[in-house]
Length: 496
Ligand SMILES: *Cc1c(COP(=O)(O)O)cnc(C)c1O
Image (cartoon, rainbow, N blue to C red):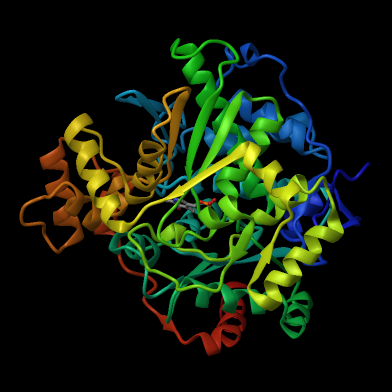
């Protein structure tokens, strides 16, 4: 079969979709990309008579060349039947003149669920396609949401063991409780002392540790990744852009083929890159607006062409966007440079050695045709949560508030604006309570949850409420110097 995926850094490093899903990252350090993005539609009318699942099947069929239609249907139906609390999966809400696409109705109340409900199915099927019998060991560093979504997606999967590392400093109370109470016999979770970057760097060193890989191979285990560098994470996210547009059409909010903007709260550039793919498929998107918090390395890059990670790191109220190295940008560089692999390689190597790189004018112009950008401060996030609640009785989580504010500041009224809502406000109780200026907020998260429900007449997701009754299983905090010993020990126990 013709291999349709290649490395961003070398056109001779090729893979089929199932190979790319199993390895996560290309062996030369690049990321797997699709060389020719197919066109899905010439008119958006095509979307009108589909539902979320059917759109997902169509998109996966375009991207996964070595999966059969039966395999794709199986994966999609398993992932999205009865796992999301809203039957639309990603409902679109009208708030004032604008639209909010709610991506947080999955089991862990963040948008990562949409991909991580599907990725385990894609991995199982990839093992079948490749006729492989190893057990997969997935190691994941998380700033809060990926880890929990992966844990729910993979728990008690007989083909997979999963270990999640989260920073002891820098997740919300609810996020911490979600991890500490995780169920499943095939999973382990530990805090790591330090910030997300410490956890991420520690995990990356494990992926490059030959001694560890050999040790794992001897016991029939292969390392794999559930982060958004895996195309199996990226592709499922294309679907909700199409579905959002479909909902606008069906509700008669837009005409067929009318252009719209999407405003995306961005960290690792995975979510917004899926929007770029949707645009290539033929979806009438005018601009993808990249919204950042005080760690606005991407705003600077998209406005000047200079990516400079040598700057202070801020811990903000939108922790899932506290990132200075945005991995998926490499994929955009590949396309915007006209698929110039040596150029991408040079940029990425310069970034690795000097902490910065600058693209040429042609690449920047290409990028600016599709992308706009903006950033906001934590103070503005609080104001925005307060204002939107007051005006529209709609609760924004801090990440979504970043995007909403960027939209407002752009003030663009020419085309319809769709803000992607990436987390439930109930995951970030303290910030939301402060934003709406709640009187006497309780310190206990579950009391605060009740207060927020009463005051706003909204409902917390049941999976978050139920955390209160669950026993804590994982309360370790690991010194990052011992991460390898920890993994070896846990693998021994998990494979007993
Ligand atoms: C992960 C995450 C983001 C950032 O998404 P990227 O794909 O990393 O750009 C934004 N908001 C929330 C709530 C998230 O969990």
